[in-house]
Image (cartoon, rainbow over all chains, first blue to last red; front, side, top):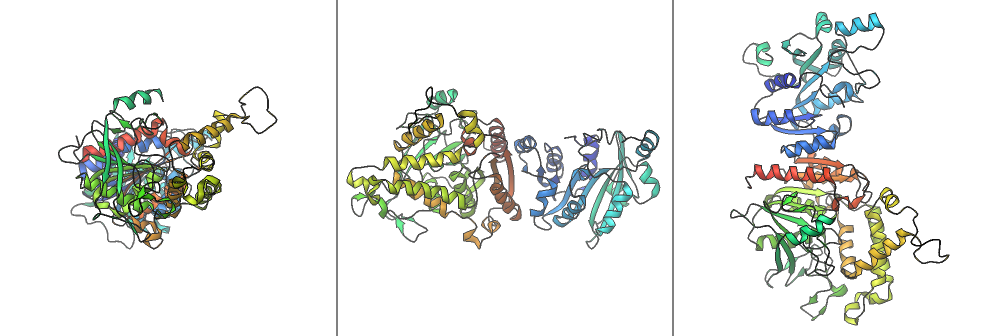
Length: 223
Length: 385
């Protein structure tokens, strides 16, 4: 399976910044547990993981992590409500069978969800499709159509619409691009749907208390 | 298995039989008790000064305490000597391994072939019905008698895995980690059905004598062998049987009779015949019954998660094997989901293999690596050197 398309560290750096110390985190699609290990050592997080490959789970066990072999579509349903402070789904949402269900499950079992996903509305993708008439190949979507694990691609606008439909609050959002620092953005602005290659969202239920911010929300959440 | 044979000679074992005084009876789920309980056990490795490195290995239905040393009756290497030993997943340089024969068994612990102190005769069918929880209670008595207040881990496959789950439910404070392998939270109708075939085969043997064969100087060997043959099929997979035996014949051509024409027939007959040399028929009846009665959720209002409500501080690791149709993966997933629902610290891996239920006894490298990683990281976490 194709791993996260972004430089993993960059994705992780932002997630590390977002997560409160000592919180409970579920990493959905945790691979070999790099993020969970970082969260445990740097943020004293009590982590759990969900990973589809036995080799990935095995690597996590060797790191002392608690990881269950399973996937987002089938196994989130069995976690109790509000079992976690955060549920992390990094670059995996387009690969699940039921993104809408998975997203709402993430926010049933966790107070907040941290979701990153490629933006199919990015200008380079639009241009390639328009000019070549073929499925685009970009740094955030590097695999040909017949080999990609992505079965439910969406644009930034599609995703924010889904968040609205599910009654989710976007607490923070940043554009991610290979090799560049994360850039805080307002995801509903039309221009961002053109220029964000990939986006990272901090979501909560609309009826939940918002994250307490002490300073400027942008510098607090993303840097 | 060749390196297994050498390791059996390398690992030092000690142990013996723990005898409990009359004022320390084993209370049983069925309402009675066993006075003068005896628990036969082996140990491998050494207990550290802090007594923090003890691992209890729980054995399966047809096994015994000889997990990593030569079996005194068969001379064969221990059934888990690929797992237990220096540098192996249950590293004897790090851990102190205890493996005891279950109550109801026939390798030295009190069971139906033991002498009833009240009558001076073998118990036979007067032996009380025991359960998996009773087996675990006897193990807990042994562990305490060995001066160990808290185990680093309880580890077991098949019936051993069920004992591990029972340990976590009944003694969560006396357990740091629990490894349940190729098991289920309850016996299914199919599990009970196969066991019933085995029991009926034993009881149909004229030498069973209503369970009183020991006093009458006979043994229901044919019935026990058939029980073992039927059960053995459930430990393998169709693919593994096909790969190992296919339709291969024992000799050139068919016998046009009922000799063992096919290699699989000969193999099963051998399995049956070898089993009766080391196993007691009444023990087989009692232990299969204990398994059939096993339903961890039943004692907790039918909710499996409730069984683990107090086990949140135990680190669980559950393993299943993809071709195991005796205790298939969905049953392990039920355990894992209940653990998650209870908020316990659970890990789970399904190992891809065509070797069926018995894969937990075989050389499965992904399984061994995952088990070793789980135990090692847990030991480092607990500062078990």
